[in-house]
Length: 505
Ligand code: GLU
Image 1 (cartoon, rainbow, N blue to C red):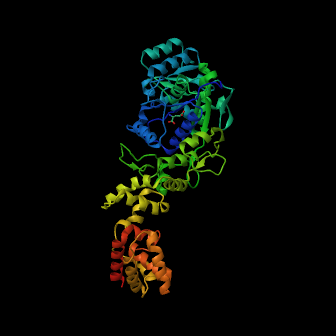
Image 2 (image 1 turned 180 degrees about the vertical axis):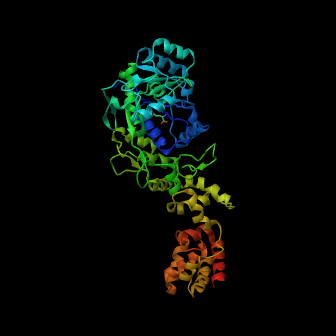
């Protein structure tokens, strides 16, 4: 068993945009596969045709492309275990349904929805199981002739799994350890429906995991209640020896309060819960995405990796490759992980700092151009260098940086009141003369000369710099004054000084 090649899968149902919890599941599968030299399979579980949403599959694939999570096999990737879309595997499932039927591990049931409803009314907490199945209309209670007749008549039926009562079912979970339940709490799950000639999720999932030689099933906690049934199905097929090991990941919880993270939390608190923007094909409602909100894929990966797992050290910043090295599925938490979106923003900020100025400038340049400014890449990069530590997202740069490219046309009233003194006009006039005489307008060229002038005159440095800033920037904030003036150059600096003197007096 320990020799077994690691093969894991991410198996979404294309029922809409991929939730961020699903992204984390895929990420953990990816990390696990990579660190064991294994393979990651991408399977589409689309046996529930009522819930199928067009565009969802493409959306999921595009999300992983953006995030840099690569699959080895599966829908759109190819491989030797295909087809990888469950809707294309009907004949395969039928074969395995028949195996269970002929071995007596499953049976055919003809109960109509009305009959089931009547039973539910008759029996409190009715469950179709070992205690009730003999009261129902199925191949265990009807004669062979009756069953054949009903089938020949084209009566609709389902195939149910015959769960033996009185057994302990053990699920060996890599995170939760031995999870044991009594088989009596399980119902005789429907495995197949004649109406659409398709298996249900449970059968398709097990058959595919087996045929695709999946060694480990890593998935969300919401699937834990299904795991005992899955274990019983493996046994019914005689596949115990190759049964995958399970890992059920902790739920993602609301940032505040109790319960599962939902799209509504995102709408209410202003953060995305989907990797990419999504437009609902029916309602045309748009849901925001991490990509469109300006997150770096590396930041999203890093953020998600630490939701439900931690390395046991102080380190928080990890590249995908580093995560492959240190990730440990057995160290995932058993309880839910709060979706601390503020932390996600923090990660994005850290990645802005981590990335080179050139890389950020490449993303910022189009924004500068869109604002009608024609600036060289070098100048954009200089601005990025001066300002990037002040923002969490690239798109936050423009409002903070526009003054580098566009002269202020008005001055912040409060700052003027506080910082533009009676004598500021006079001082700025003098300063513009001092600056006008400077040959070398670099930071190093200006700073000592201006400082000496301030000292000789006995002016307060704060007074001078505050007024200088107001004149060049229009507000009371920004990077170092000589950074700004040297960026603007002598001509523009003097022009802004004169305008301010004229307007503010
Ligand atoms: N199709 C299921 C889902 O959408 C997969 C569950 C599993 O991984 O077994 O999450």
